Each structure stands twice: as C-alpha cells, then as structure tokens.
Amino acid sequence: MRLAVDVDIPYIENFLEQLSAEFSWDVIKFSDSFLNNKVISECDAIFVRSTSKIDDSLIKDSRISFIGSATSGHDHIDNKYMNWTLSDKKCFVAKGCNADAVANYVLTIMSLLISKKEISVNNTVGIVGYGNIGSLLKQKLDMFNIKSYFYDPYIDSTKKGCKDNIRDILNCDIVSLHASYSKIGHFPSHHLLNQGNLTDSKLKFLINSSRGEVVDEEYLQNQTTFKYISDVWSNEPYCSKKAINNAYLSTPHIAGYSVQAKKNASTSLIRSFCNFFNINIHIEDSSIKTNVSNFDIPEIDLIENKFPCTFFRDLFDIELCSNNFKHSYLEKGDLFPDIRKSFKHINDYSIYDIEDAARKFN
Image 1 (cartoon, one colour):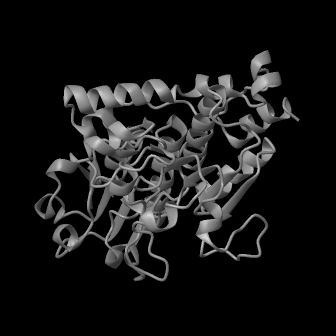
Image 2 (cartoon, helix red, strand yellow; image 1 turned 120 degrees about the vertical axis):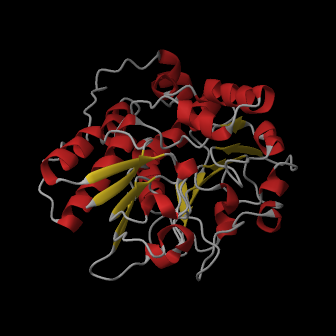
C-alpha cells in the first residue's frame, strides 16, 4: 500500500514513521508544485492541502481510494470526488478544524479597530455564513454582549439572530464573511457581495476570511464608502497588488494558521484515514490547553474600550502582519506562497479562554 503526502502538512511525521515501520506502507512525499498524475498513479491514498487541485487530471486512472485534505475548505476539490459515495472510496476534509483561529482573527481585527476608536462594542456585527466558524464567532460576540446577526440561506430564518435577506446584514456596522465558495447550487456564493448590494449599504468595515471570490474584488478596490479588510484574495496565489494595497488591512491567507488549528486538521485527517483502512494506531490528543484566567486586563480596556484589546493584540499583532505582508508582496516582490509559508503559527485561545476574559467585562 502506498500513501502520497504533501511535505508541508505539519504535525504528521510521527504518524508517517509508524505507518511505514509497523504497517508496511510506502510513503511518498511531494511538493504541491510538482504534484501530477504520474506521482500518485500507483498510490492508494493522498494527503493534500488547499493549494492542490483535485480533479480528473490528477486522480483519473490512479489507484487512489482515499483523498484527505488537511484544510477546512473544499473548493480545491472537484465535486465528483468531494461527493464520493462508494463504500470503497472516501474524500475527507477537516471541516471546522480552524474555527477557533478564524473567529479569533475577526475578534483581533475588532480589538484593533476599537483601540483606534474606529468602532465600539455598541456597533453591530453581521455574519455571512453560519457554519462552524460563523456560529462560533457569534457565540464569542455574545459573550461580550456585542449585538450580532447572521445570514445563511441554508439555515432556518426563524432562528434567533437570523436575517433572511443579505441586505439587512449589510446594514450592520461590521460585516464578517464566512461563506463557503461555490459557483453552482441553489445559493452560489461567487461574487455574493457586489456593487449591486453594497452600494447602498451602511457598513463601515467588511472583513473577509472566507474566499476572495466571494466578493467582487474589482469593485471593492475602487470604492471608498467603507473599509475592506481581507485575508483572502481572488486568483490566489496571483493576487491583485492593487487590491492588497487598497485594503485597510491585508494578510496572506493565514487566519486559520494557529498551532491548534493545524494540529486539529492533521489529527482529524489521520483518524479518518486509519478508520477507512482499518489501521490501529494510537493517535495523540491534538488539543493544547491554555490558561488565561489570570490574564491581567489593563484599565483602558476595562473602562474605556470595554473589550480586551490587549488580550487579542498579544495573541496576534494583525497590524504588523498587514504591514509586513504589503511590504513583502508589493515592494520586495516576494511570492505569495512563500510569504504564506513563512508565517509562524500562533498559539490560539479556545472558547473557554475567551469566556474567562469575557467574565471580566460582565
């Protein structure tokens, strides 16, 4: 049996060594830029990241029966393989693995905007997409008594906080995008936000950590009505320099890049693989416990900001990240994949850590 693995999937070395030594699997490592049908034609399984396109040109006429992606998104996988329903074939995506990281990314942005007096805890937040990330973000906002609403055409519109019209969401002060990307289906999300529904909106800040193509990027980079903050870009890795330069904050698709998110993804992928092939290997718990209950909240956050701005800034200095990204991509000409790969994974705060911090404000 043979497994092909992207060399840049973290935290799986021990598993690969054990798989090879104890279960006689051959392990082939590849760089996504050199991935093709010839590399994996004699393989039974493949582990990829979101940078690898899974379609007929790669999989057809190969022995592959298990496709595993160490990422929460699936727009890099052709529906033909994403929807494998045969008992002897499986496609796994680590949905929700980075939910904490992305929700914290949004809260980190808000903490910066609050500290700069651009917004306050009295502003409303609209959430587009109410899956693993969107629902967790709302849960965290509720902890700080920040009013939030959400739009998701797949969710019962009678659910508390749900709006059945996206234009209602776009009248919130801050809108955060967490919709999955699709061009087909009943509710395609390609250019979901565009000139038609954004022109008369009342929002002040639009935050995108879903996919670049969910918005009409060309329109956004030319409008001045509200400020655009994005972690994702159309046509990655060949991103528009104008779009990155014009955004209020720009980051290189790293919102989900926490130690915990990456370990969650790798562990979930390994578990699914082992279950499919009936392999009995001890898999270590991927969770990392943090303890911030004794975190010292500065007086300015308690009294003036009414939000733990320092707490989130210490987690991740997003303004510095944006400045470094713009300098590297726009001025130095560094390649987008190299910038993204060089980002150091941060340690995440879980929902329980956030809850501890929120108690100090209630």
